[in-house]
Amino acid sequence: MVTPIPDLNTSGLDSVIVGVATAVPIFIPALLMFIFFIIAITGYMKQRQEGYADISQWCVVSGIVTSIVALILSMVPNVINISTLISTIVITIAFGIWFISSGDRQ
Image 1 (cartoon, rainbow, N blue to C red):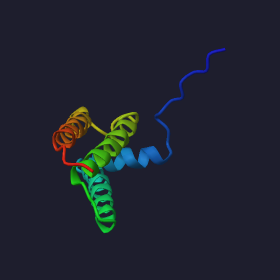
Image 2: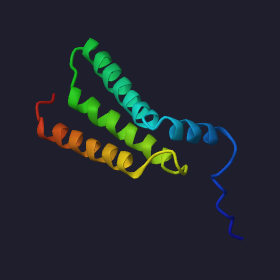
Image 3: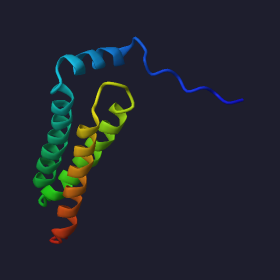
């Protein structure tokens, strides 16, 4: 027996996020930028304390995490628009190219 896909238009926590995202359109991009910079800066600082830090590596890691969060948020209708989702993926690919082209690793 095939289980039907649940309806994502619930009145739970996602309705609060949808309400905030429609009232304040900059909220979701600001949230994604916050996630990106927290991961990149804290990872870089922690690795710098240990002796060797690579900012391009942490930009790729935080870009991947941010893209995954954006993909998850895109599953809820009216939370994230397609231009924000595509922007996060393009930025992650750009950081990946930067990481690969900076070949000074130990």
